[in-house]
Amino acid sequence: MPELPSFWPNREYSRFLRVDGVDWHVQTRGTGPALLLIHGTGASSHTWAALADALADRFTLIMPDLPGQGFSGALPESDISLDGFSRHLKGLLDSLGVRPKLMVGHSAGAVIATQMTLHCQFAPAAIVSLNGAFLPFGSAAAPLFNRLAKWLSKSTLLAYITAAHGMFNRPVRNMLVETGSVPSAEMMRCYRELISRPDHIMGTLKMMAGWDLEQQRQLLPSLRTPLHLVTCSNDRTVSPWQSERLSEFIACSQLYSVPNLGHLGHEEDPGPFTDIIASTL
Image (cartoon, rainbow, N blue to C red):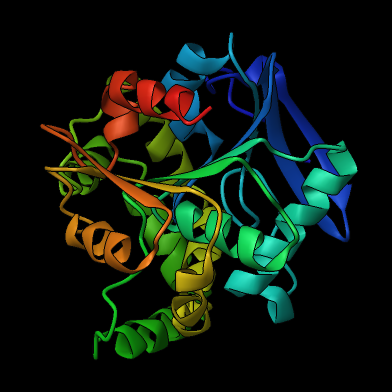
């Protein structure tokens, strides 16, 4: 099992376990109803550090690293898909004996949360999407990006070059600022650690390569779990219009707009998100 850096947020709540052939790193913290937190592409459980501090006295927080990212092992090649990530995450929760009362997903994590509800017999009281990356529907460019990611994910050399580049502060800061967010020193350090790991780079590229949302797009209007769509006005990674469009054809949805924060808004200021999450119960 990999060893967590000494500075890693919530390190004392970490555990490693193997479920259905996948090595997981998961953090469990707090007391109260179970709340599953699913990070986005290229991140890890560290992204929830500030939010966890604010919610741990009200919820039991389940914060896994998705397979192939952070400190979790990769999925089998045949399972690298939206459905595969969802099924294996369900397997992790089953092994922990947890049925989440709430599910919160950031970016691509919001897509996994809805997929689990649609296909994995989960019935949470609500799903909270933070800048959900449901993709621009009907975008002609989406297949091109998927093919590019598949090509890049085959290059081990690229992963090592990217990892070496990520060891320096300036490229990491530039990458985070381009999301519209202002990263803290702690988050900078965590992302620099992740981007210095070739396995994390490769896992992120493979996740992107297997990301096909067409089937889910067709099923989303049938979602009956309340969906709380939270957008940030400064988000430069996922345009708020994605959630605005989604809210138009999902009957049981509610739209929120958080001003002055970017794609990583929950890292910048957990306050508005804490209030929205708590209000869902």
